[in-house]
Image (cartoon, rainbow, N blue to C red):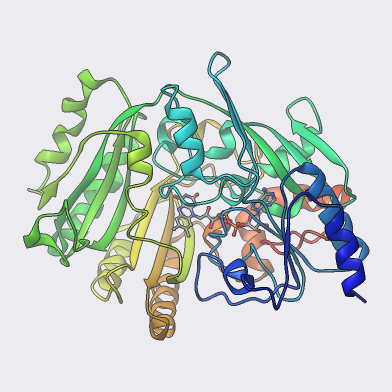
Length: 458
Ligand SMILES: Cc1cc2nc3c(=O)[nH]c(=O)nc-3n(C[C@H](O)[C@H](O)[C@H](O)COP(=O)(O)OP(=O)(O)OC[C@H]3O[C@@H](n4cnc5c(N)ncnc54)[C@H](O)[C@@H]3O)c2cc1C
């Protein structure tokens, strides 16, 4: 039985602080990004260093407490928190060290991507991440990492060189190609199943100013635009990334007043290649079907990464469903167009993130992330600031997904799934699943780390 004396003893051995029910800041501390998630942990431990993490893991295990690990708290299904258990919150562990010469960056486990971009941009470099700067490095990396630089530099896991991990038995180990290579393989897509990553080392690329921004087309042309996009992007040079979206134009600057609130389809571009080639690369984009807006312009990479932060602040209701996609058939496009017409709120959207280019250099078995043959990660996202919209946005995302799933490759990106059951997790790892189970059995046989898209040890 957990009592006050045990908690006090545990707390005395930590550098970080503990927040518990009854504390003035408990409600703020238990909140995660998705306001649909309303969990009540028994202890939230703000770890300050590796020793705090080791002690917290040991305490949770010895007290038989459910254990959750939180970095950015962005997980849609709320996998950074739990009811009744202990939450290891890493947000105080924000150390970053750039080694410009070796083109590597060491990042502590509580950083957001905004923290990383800020640090590496000072050296004219970046590592691939996602599209929102407030997302945690921990969750995004361990699930795979799809974003603006995927086609040029590969997925985030493709750039993970090393990780320090606190295992279920409380030991700290390093995982890399040389040390614990099985664990290193599993961390690159297998989520938080294997331990708490206290620091990551990523490869850096010379990416500083990029040409980025959206092209919007009238929604009436959506089928035509999607058909053009599916052919264009897979043949485009790797320096160009572009994710497709249905959206309502945000009602703010810098969007033209005439377009604000309008339902459109579009592509969000990021070109990170030689400036001299840019004009030729964007020529087909400008010339294909007169756009409503072509807003591509030079910007620092961190500005692109932060561009959507204001649109998607923490505290919104969030429900999403995802799939991997190999081919965008005409029949699938017809279904997309049908559901886009019913976008339930101004913030709701559908994105198709490219997974080709540099991400296709690796094969299915090279990392735990298995869908190297897919061309896109597709996600239907229902979002609203209003709690009353929760049923409506969830129903839209589910029925949209139901209609498109038959055209998908089967599994989904684990970072964009809700609580969808074991079969969906298996489908996401396909042929890599059995190896993940074997590695889980080796490193976490009692499934201490189970608040995640769980790979059961037996
Ligand atoms: C607004 C928004 C935008 C997004 N954009 C993208 C995108 O562009 N590309 C993309 O690939 N994904 C994107 N995602 C999905 C994102 O990758 C997942 O939601 C991811 O789980 C978030 O990571 P986190 O650390 O913020 O989450 P948390 O909720 O803190 O954690 C998520 C999971 O990861 C585990 N975990 C986190 N840190 C660690 C650690 N250090 N060690 C061990 N386990 C850990 C947790 O235990 C939990 O299971 C986005 C999500 C949101 C909400």
